Amino acid sequence: MLMKIKGFHPTKIVCLAKNYAAHAAEMSSKVPEAPSIFLKPVSSLIYDGDSIVLPASSSRVEHEVELAVVIGKRCKNVSEKEAMEYVLGYSIILDITARDLQAKAKNAGMPWTEAKGFDTFAPFGPRIVPANEFDPSAARISIKVNGKIKQNGNTKDMVFKIPRLISHISHIMTLEEHDIIATGTPEGVGPIKAGDNLEAEIEGIGVLKNSVNF
Image (cartoon, rainbow, N blue to C red; front, side):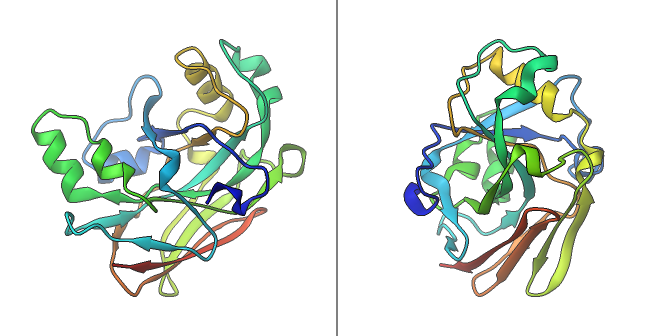
């Protein structure tokens, strides 16, 4: 599955929670004082044209469109000033979430890896744009479900910018070549169902297209 982008072998997907203030608000949460991270397994990765498979254990699965930062070389304890030297490029990633399972886990005070980690819950692509060919500081980011825009934001609204994210994460865990940082989602997350067609777009990168099935 990982060979769909030739030679691409991430070891982990590091995701940011509530990195857009408007999304934090729609989730009835506050913006964290420091970057808040969680992990998705690489087994959740699929690519352009692949299908998201809805798990039988969830009755509400939602889309979250995000800018993906792809790491280019081993990265540990780097400063914000040097952080961008470790970026290989950028792409689009969807953080598909079983929202009901997440809520259940939160209410029980338990981790919510299950809600984020199902196979097919991390569509990625359609390509990796080299770092020197894309400006991540102010790019429009959106997603359409069956042709209707559901999320429509801009990366300029990230609370914590990419250098801070890379530095922060690298002081917790070593980032390896091809590891993915999913930088958070703007407001407008919502449900998807079998038969839906998703089109996630970031200007300067392209459109990631995925269908939804049982």
